[in-house]
Image (cartoon, rainbow, N blue to C red; front, side, top):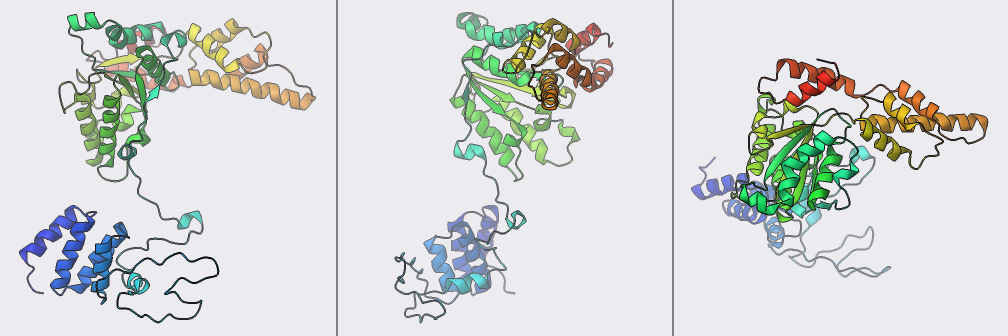
Length: 436
């Protein structure tokens, strides 16, 4: 094999670094063809056509490499029903080619079929469908900032201690701009909501956005993580870019431990780079005021699994424990889930007392189960009846509070891993429950 020229070697490296640059690949293929390396030229021409099927330079190159004149074949015009377009054959009758520019693209595609897959395939069963790489949502401006103006913290029943912490962290500085400037309080900030699942952390974040009159951007794991290298980091950047454009804006990261888990636990570098990107976005590396007016809230059921760098001062440096709803909150949640159901003389106080320690999701399940009890009785008797307190208490007795397992794990953390005092509020809550 002859020694490769420096120009071809340089272009080969450039194509490897930017495989989707069609113009660069076509230029490289032309040099290969001029150097007598037709097989390689056909391979790169086919790769260019797979990315840009209508590119005239790529089509001309393929025609030249396959022995044509290098002039791309024109697209055939659409013929009316029952008529043939000029230059086409009747079924089963081969058409004689009359010009050197009539290149046989079907033959070319068949010859390079081992280089690139076909652009289209017949779709049979779902298993036959070839998966298409996902496009990052941010690349097409699909990060839509919601408005939650009609929602306030007053709509959240009970949970007064949590509301007070949110007031001090976000709401008071926003409502008093002159005092904020006097005391040098920045509008940047981050707060981590943690606690057992189903206790309303996301609802609280929406209420904060409503109180601020700010936009709300909810981010889940599937919004960030992508199977293709670099897309996850790009998604994070686009999320923060959208929030900065719409400032003031509250960005809510749900399941933060899945996005920002401890880097020391990851074997590959993929998740580490995602955490690194999140750290850079929280710091607003573009400028000192990049995140002004962007309020970052995050929710997690496992704060002990979150990377410590995310909880550094200036990032998600404040933690708020969101516990199962207290008595006023349970009453409000039960009334909400029973509001459109046929109920009769419900003893709300008895039900609130019976459901101590239940999460909001548990309470919704109690109402659903009580409805099933009444429905099945109505089916058996043939006469519809109302949902009663007995139905609700029976359902509550059949449903175990889902928070018990979480508190069992949290108790170990509060006992053996609280040297920094980060979980002091958890320790106090456990003491009120007689668990520690």
